[in-house]
Structure formats: C-alpha cells, structure tokens
Image (cartoon, rainbow, N blue to C red; front, side, top):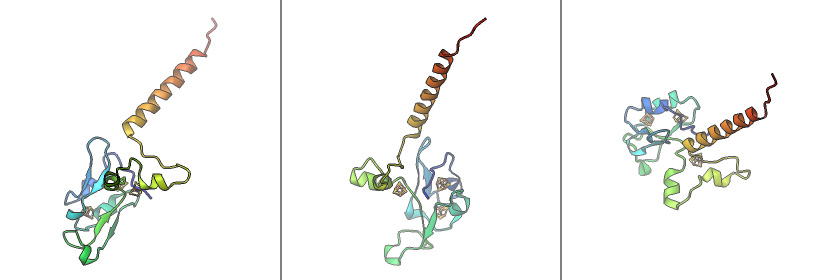
Length: 130
Ligand code: SF4
Ligand code: SF4
Ligand code: SF4
C-alpha cells in the first residue's frame, strides 16, 4: 500500500531525529535513511501502515545504529531525478493507468473549476415562472 503523503503528516511529527520530512506546502514525505535510528515510532502513528523498518546487512548499513532503516514510498523522487523520468515506477508498470502522480494544487484547482462550471450550467437551465 502506498504512502498517502498526508497533509500535516503524523509520521513527521514523531520522528526524533528529523529523518522524516515533508516538503513545503502539501509536499511529499521522504526519509533520510542516513539519520534514521530504526526506532519505529513512525510505524506506530502511520494510519495506513505503510512504513516498514528493515534491518540492513552491516556491509550495506547507512543508518546511525543499524537497528534498521525506515522505508516507504517516496514518490520515486531520487529514481526519477536519476533517470530523468516524469512518471513513477508504479505509474509506468500499471497496465490500466490506474495510478497517476498529480500536483495536488493543480488537481484541486481543476476540480474546483469543473464543479463551479457544473453549478453555473445547472443554474442556467433553471427557468422561473411567476
Ligand atoms: S507514512 Fe503514513 S503518516 Fe506518513 S505521510 Fe505516509 S501515509 Fe501519512
Ligand atoms: S524509524 Fe527512523 S524515520 Fe521512523 S521515527 Fe524512528 S528515526 Fe524517524
Ligand atoms: S513505485 Fe515509487 S511512487 Fe510507486 S509506490 Fe513505489 S516508491 Fe512510491
């Protein structure tokens, strides 16, 4: 199950090392693995159960303690930057295009405008007889 990148994300409020951060505005929530101490507090408050803490082999350990490193969806930010992709990996893999990465502000603005247009049209078709 994917991270919802919640508004006012609770996982970012409890992280004692500031490893979970939300980008400005309604931005994505990402983890800095190097400073994560694997305390699992974030896993306890996530309402969707999308964070897992996984132990890394010593040779591959980048966390401060090797108690494990928190992992979750980061909207493929690093992968997209590295590969120059605009779509996420799950968007590309989905055979029915059911997954789409959208800008929340743009999405909400478009929905608001569409609804306003619907209401305006509905009012046009109402005729009053006195
Ligand atoms: S990890 Fe959970 S709480 Fe944090 S932003 Fe994602 S869904 Fe929300
Ligand atoms: S497991 Fe890592 S990311 Fe989660 S709250 Fe603890 S330090 Fe922060
Ligand atoms: S493929 Fe990328 S965007 Fe999709 S769930 Fe995984 S990390 Fe998130």
